[in-house]
Image (spheres, rainbow, N blue to C red):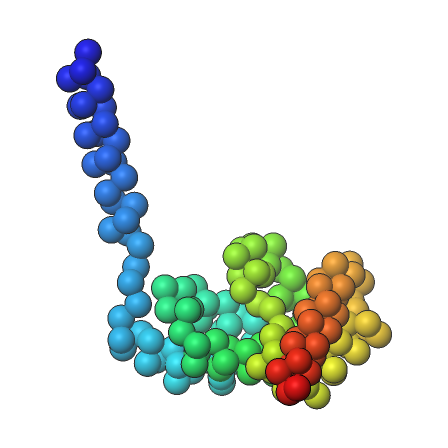
Amino acid sequence: MRNYFAVAALFLSMAALPVHSEQKQCSESQRTRMETKSDTIRSWDALYRSFMTYRACLDDVEAQEGYSESKARILADHWDTLPRLSALIRKNPEFGRWVMLDATMNIDDLHKIRESAIHHCPAGMKRICARLVKQADDAVAENADAQK
């Protein structure tokens, strides 16, 4: 009976090995490409492709600031594309959790996004607009606290 459990344990541990080896690591060249491009993205589809391509690298602080710039530019300058963002979030909720406003964004952009979410929220998008208002308020408050 002990041999059965030992064999079962060995089998289960071997079955788990591919899961770890399938997780991609972020190469230095990927990190460099991501950091170079992260602040120049101007559409939700391009941002989604970048997110999917560089997911293993998304802990990079410099790239996060670049991505914040891209998110702010798309929301502030292309508000009418919010339905596309909503569709991508439905497709991939992880992307939705990643696309958020933060204190590294320009205060004027945060105010513009907040106002658009309050006054120009597309039909059926109340939930995402409410989330953007809250995130904008939180980011502005965090920025104000950092200025003290």
